Each structure stands twice: as structure tokens, then as C-alpha cells.
Length: 143
Image (cartoon, rainbow, N blue to C red):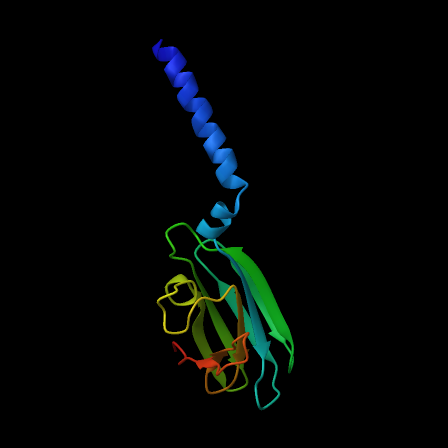
């Protein structure tokens, strides 16, 4: 009798997990994100970008004036996902958290949630563009 209950429980658990994995609920739990970085340096210099998080290194990318680089990922269950990028151009090097779940995947954040996070990189500061055409959000460099 106990064996039958265990089998029923396991069957129900597996069924639930399959349904969870194939529904939009799973997508909501692990938000899909698309980060786009655009070189908008006024000096029209080449921008060297290197982005990574704890688990993944996106490599070193060279962006000419107006060029872009993008990557996709899902926010982790704990909503602690952070991607940090270093940016280098002649005479300047800076770092910035290009994606932070507490800022970019939080409805209570002052800048709101972005599923496509478009960043324009200027000399004075990185700027997250708004898809609705509203005022962009400027942020200070981390270093």
C-alpha cells in the first residue's frame, strides 16, 4: 500500500515538473533576457567590450562606431543574475553591471523591467534606452 502511494506521488511529481517545464509559468520564473550593447562613442573610437557573470564569459568583443554586440540568457530562480562588462577605448577603461536582476528584472525598480535591455555606451556614461521612446536612463560607471 505504501509502495503504491509512493509510485502515485512520484508520477504526480514528474507530471507536474513536465507541465512546469513546458508552460509559460516556467518562462516567467526564469525570465528570458536579451542584452544589446551599442557603441555610441562621440569620438567614433573602437570600443572593446568584455562581459561575464559567475558562470559564463562572453569573450572580448571589438565594436566599431555604431556596431553592436548582443547576448541572451535567463535570470536565475533566486533573481541574483548579474553580468558585468568592462569597456575600453583610447584613454578610458571602465566597468559596469550591464544586467542586474535587482535593477533590470524588478517591477519595483525605478528603471523598470527590460526583456530586451538596449545599452548605448557613451564616454560619460552607459545609457539604457527605452523601447517606448521615453527618456533613456543614464547610469554612472562603476569604476
